[in-house]
Length: 115
Image (cartoon, rainbow, N blue to C red):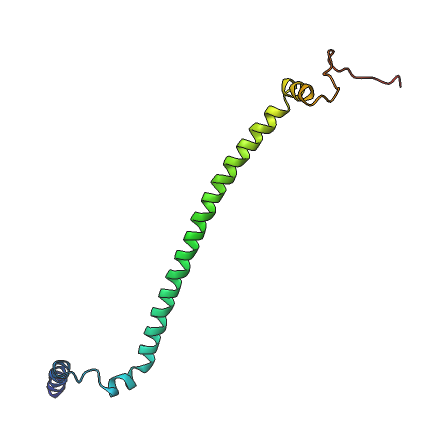
């Protein structure tokens, strides 16, 4: 029975200390310094981690946009190259630049050795 009275009086004292503003006294901070420091460090680590993640996500989005632009440029360059290697396009370029070459009239043929 005496234990219940001590618990009850301690509970009343804690409530009274909170109301009077004595709960966060210097003694409270001395007793719980390790926990308070750990809480502050964890909070700072959380904030730093969130910042790093947001920066990384922004960089990924920028790189995705750059990749899409590069792929578009690749398709355009490929189409330009394919149009340049057409026989009709080569003939047109040779005539425009007056190179003095002409396209062959006969298809190519393969030489075979007699061995």
